[in-house]
Amino acid sequence: MIRRFILPAAVLALLSGCGSSGLDRNRPDEFAVTRSAPLSVPAEFTLPAPQEGAARPQDTDTKQKMLDAMFGSSTPSS
Image (cartoon, rainbow, N blue to C red):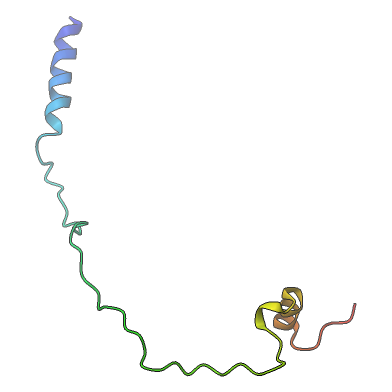
């Protein structure tokens, strides 16, 4: 009695993956890769020349930079 239901259910489950369900949608193709333009280096860099005696940007206090960004150049009084 149980075999009458198990065998058809198993066959139906196996065959359900073989056909299309009619709900096929147009999906993007994940293997279609487009090429981008190559990177280019600018002809000249207009970086400012380092000034003698000037503070190095990486040596500044990060806490002070954070306070300056939040409250402006003057620090708040406690």
